[in-house]
Length: 134
Image (cartoon, rainbow, N blue to C red; front, side, top):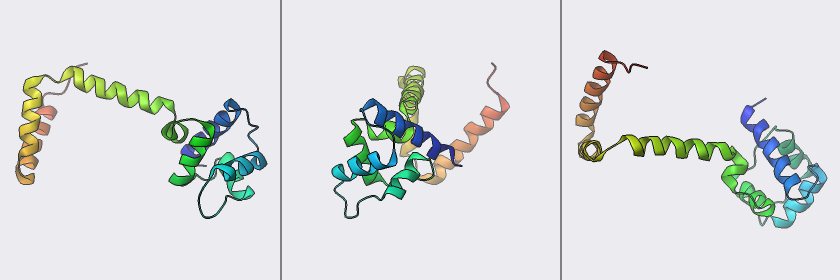
C-alpha cells in the first residue's frame, strides 16, 4: 500500500478524534457531506477508502475536510513535520548565504539559459573536484 495514503489516513483519524468525532466511515460521510459544497456527495465506500489509506481526496475535498476538522489542509495532507523541515532548510539557506552570494545568484538567474547551463557545469565540476569534507 502507498505510504502517503496510509499516513493521510492516520492524520485524518487523528484530526477526527481531536475534533471530537469517531473515525468511522458513517460519521465521516455524514459530517463531510454537510460541509462539502461540491456537486456529488461522498459515498460511504469513498470515505471508507480514505480511512483505510486506499485513496486520497481531491484538492476540493481536502479543503472541505480541513475546514470541517479545523486543521490546515497541508497539515492534513502532508503532516506538520513537512512544514518544519521546509522552514529549517530555508533557514539554513538564509543563514549560509551572504550578500555577495545573493548578488552572484541574481546575476546567474539573469543569464540566458545556455550560459546558465555552462556556469552550472563549471560549478558542478568544481564541486566534484573539491568535495565537502565532513
